[in-house]
Amino acid sequence: MKKKPVNGMKDIMPDEMAVRDYVIGLIKSTYASFGFSGMETPVMESLENLQSKQGGDNEKLIFKVLKRGEKLQIDKAQTDNDLADAGLRYDLTVPLSRYYANHMAELPAPFKALQIGSVFRADRPQRGRYRQFTQCDIDILGEDTYLAEIELILATTTVISKLDFHNFTIRINDRRILKAMAASCDFPESDFDKVFIILDKMDKIGIDGVRGELLECGYSTEQVDQYLRMFEADSTDSSRLLALKEELGKNLADSSAEELKKIIDTVDAVKEGDFRIVFDPTLVRGMSYYTGPIFEIAMDEFGGSVGGGGRYDHMVERFAGTPVSACGFSIGFERIILLLMERGFKVPDAAEKTAVLVDKKTDAAKLAEVFKAAAEARKEGRTVTVSSMKKNKRFQKEQLASQGFDKIEDVF
Image (cartoon, rainbow, N blue to C red; front, side, top):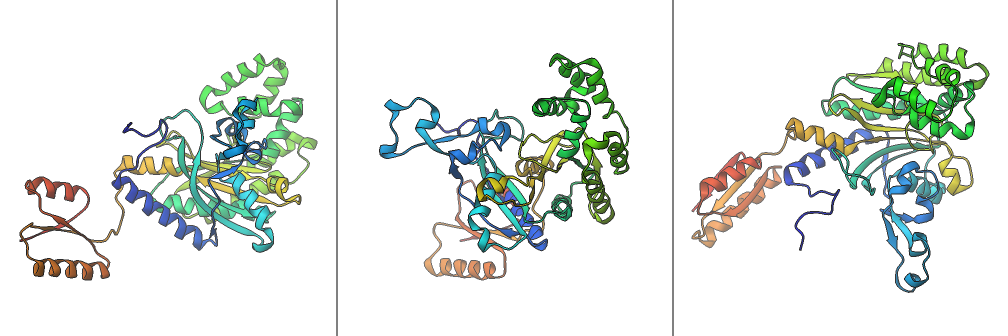
């Protein structure tokens, strides 16, 4: 039998589990104070839902589940989908959209949802990235104004700040602005996703690298240079949005620039945490289901994104047949935990932990006293463990101390 977990998945040790439980508790209580309600969906979804062309590249990373019993006809199968009819969810957004469409009549409008659970992707494991990981999402469904974005950003940054993270950045953009910029340079609409995938590499390969890849796709030098000039402005504050709207003219006829400016200015005016919110026209977000504002959390400590989200106004409609506004923000839970563990984070205000070591010769009356005293201490909120005394008592006590037991008693 193999002792190690499946590649890309991990066992969680008690010290990390304590931190995870604390962070989840903090997340739940903080989001509850903003009016979000907990809910849950199954880890398995119908394969047709997961392959609905709404999940971007994640649809290539689905763990498929074989049909069962008589439905599984291996000898007649010609494709993977002849063998499988379900898959493990790769995110929480597609399941939430199905859930809302199924229960819309029973839910308030707007519905502020909090969902924490495991998701699965057949991805290449690396630092902070696993094949099974916990996602923590908040979403607002049925709110069609920018109030949803403001609330989501403030709630998420409040949690991050409570975990003592400082100097992080919320990068924000709008998919409508991205499309207008591409359209103003005469990129065909059918090529937008290809252009955006290249643009998304800006922070890794720089503007010259982006230029080179766009030219390799066959676009003209004039067209590419015109496009990239839009990203050369130094300004990252909201004033850049109004200047950009003037540049884009008829290609950006809606109010997206003004709305994005209101989001930035409002968050900046009321924020309590130590972070910046900046307009970043190079921010793309990979999911094709985003329809409006998009945002990410960037931290120097990690060297990349530790959370993100945006507006996805058409996804629920695919399930419900009626338009539903929707916007969500997901914390990169595993990456936050990784950073906390690397810091040596300790759970604050933890209950006093007492270990009672009982000699094997202790009589029944004394044992009863020990367990009664332990029960009383637990009623007072303290943690008490009762264990038999080992021969190497010194090593036993060192182990207990490393587990956070600050009081160790011997009973003979």
